[in-house]
Image 1 (spheres, rainbow, N blue to C red):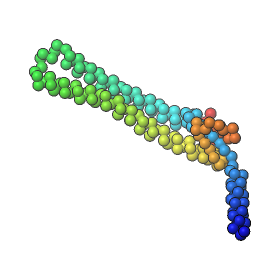
Image 2 (tube, rainbow, N blue to C red):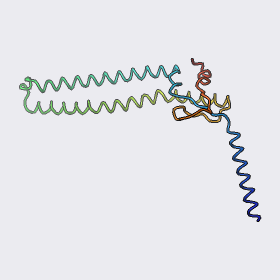
Image 3 (tube, rainbow, N blue to C red):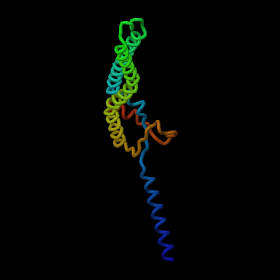
Image 4 (tube, rainbow, N blue to C red):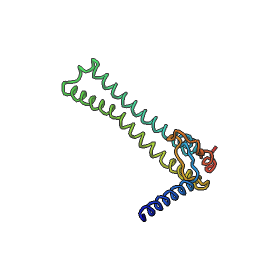
Length: 170
């Protein structure tokens, strides 16, 4: 009988603790970083920097393609008669190496773009998250979710206006 009473008391205590934790849950909010980040002035500077970097890589790629096409045209023309067999072999090998370099550059450029983007965006995201955490704390929000990860959020508040206000953004 003592076991049954103690089990019942334990169950009652667990139920009370669980009910109490739900009552103290606090407010729930959400925010869209996809909407917030572009409003930050740092983001606009990073975006401009990213476009400049992308254009520089594109120009470098175009220069490499131009060089490849010139070398290819040279080897495809009638001017090859002035080269001996060894010279032609060297030029073909050089053209093959240039082709490999051009095709590899596309992947390398993509990786460089991703690295540059992360380098530029990481500090902006950090500042945004710190602002969100500050606003959440100041306004009593216990949980703040990323809006894009939610399918339904009727019991939550959108913190975007509060965070923009905190950072004096329009």
